[in-house]
Image (tube, rainbow, N blue to C red; front, side):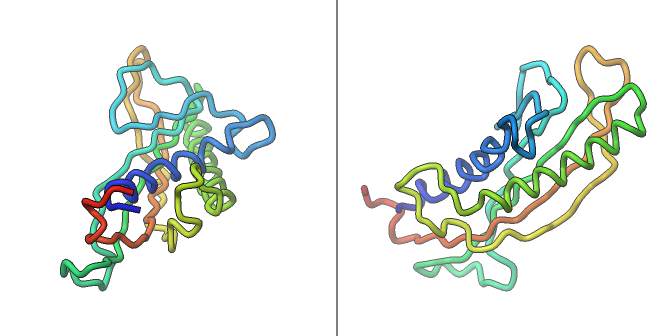
Length: 167
């Protein structure tokens, strides 16, 4: 798998693992909307999971040396919003949703979206943070809405020498 395909596969599969649980008996059966990009012009329907992909960087403790293969980390933030008129209840619901997102990823991490993806695409999933108290502004709502964020780091290996080869 070449470099660009590898990076795309990480992003596609993380999103796929979340979408697999948006079924009637899934962890995320109540979720109305999953936003798969860093920005959206669409109105937000809650409960909602907003997936934000952060930069890919060398894995902790690894040199940034351009060796043939390099272990790297791609961090994803899952912003979870579940509106309730009682803002304390809204915060609890958002935090609960964030934990269900984590469970969804753990449950499905061995299922790849495409047969072309390596079976062991992600080597480790590391918990970075749970931000239980945050807020977002949503058009049409007068107050800011509580949100919780789950931040996970996905470690994988890239092969610089396959960057230009066609598969």
